[in-house]
Image (cartoon, rainbow, N blue to C red; front, top):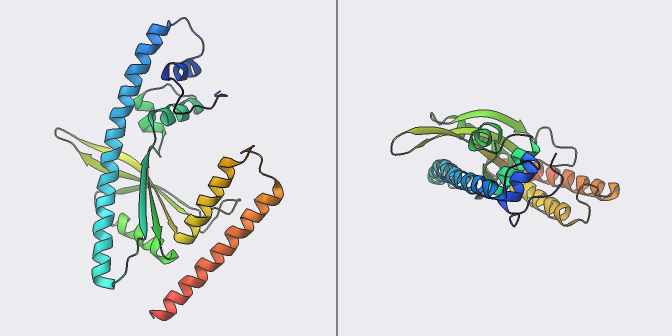
Length: 236
């Protein structure tokens, strides 16, 4: 069980010690293993970076087409990120898995992530349909936190997508997590995350504060619905 928080300044040899426990391996052996592991994980980052580029290109084309045909953007902004080697290592340790690239690819679905911010709720499901219509993309899991919000009020549509990435001598399918939410949902989620991250005890936010955050999420959700209704009436 991981009890010490891994940060970007934690030496990889210490991470290996956390994962494997104190064994008979020498520092030199662990240093060599750490160097090999971090090189493998950086190679993995390149693969996931290529997968993100594939999806972002598709989304940019779809967004441009929508502007031409409907004179508006269904996508407000897009953000992407790739977990650092140490973040991947930490997640494997928390899952009690051996630190290697194979386990990372098979057991971590959010190494690569894309966040799509839309103006309206309807846009979220339209983007999902457009992605599903792409012949070479496969939605392997969908979690709808808009229809079924998390207890804290969090709302977003999460998709895990398999995307083919073409290299000089082979093709690989790579998993990418896509979160699709409205501007209002993103506003709440960003501030809620920031508040919890900066709190002295991140795991124990006072009940009254949690209730207030939940209330804000509900108000924002109602506003989202009202803005969608206004949009529908104006463009009806």
